[in-house]
Length: 368
Image 1 (spheres, rainbow, N blue to C red):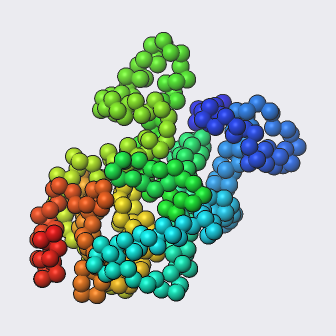
Image 2 (cartoon, rainbow, N blue to C red):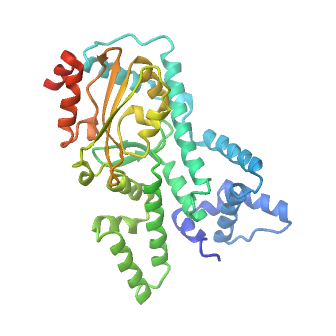
Image 3 (cartoon, rainbow, N blue to C red):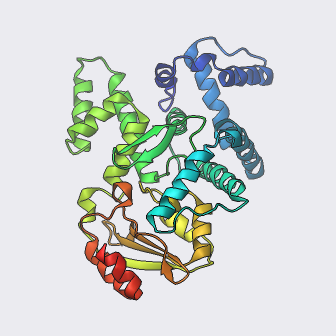
């Protein structure tokens, strides 16, 4: 078996994968194409299934490759994106009303096309977030073994909304309306790297010197972080990826002390792409970050101000504060990156200075 093949890992994680409909379909396709039967051994049937994806992604003809990826997207959208009849509209209605009351607007009447627009927003958000993972994992930049791609993608599709306070993703169900988890390429690479090291360790005899040496190397590479080391042993993608997002995604406690950075204003009526893209890859609770249609709707109402602090390379790219305008007024309380969209403990002076620009309205929020 080639070094980058590890169907046994997937067999262990998903004990019925080798008998699943998709694996059986891949086996029949191979048999029809080659005239030879795929062995019944679970590992070989799983590897044949992975080879089918590799065949699509590595086609030399770019046009055929793109057609294959687009066909794959359609199948995955149909299988994974929420159906309209499962959208929990009652929850969103109550949420809209609660926010309006908190902002002092009372309980407004919803527009006649509200449900149609909400459906478009939710389904569009899920499709777009899913496509980000598909596009990246099918690109030449994603130089990971096929088994690791499958593990990461399948695990990601089972993750629901992110709870900032508990620092974990919920379990995705048929009524989960949140987009799929944000893609942070660096955090994904870190997660796959540690699981590759872990699988290499567990493939060796427990008392072997080589295993002990590799375990020490892994622990050292994780900066002797006991919590992280213990998480690696669980081989749980959701836990590992979440830990990486919090630790390396730019919003860890250690990185927040640096408040140097800059404000950027996204003008009213502008396209939302730049704003939306600038918020991707960070564990934020901002609705602007989880759905491009929401960002579009917000920009139709007014300017959108975001403060980006510097990362370790002194590049101002870490979103820390958001101020949404409605016309000339501040539409809602400024948003931060702590649980409940609260302001973090370091960035206060930056917000105080900014609010002075908005005159009396800014002073009202400053008092709050």
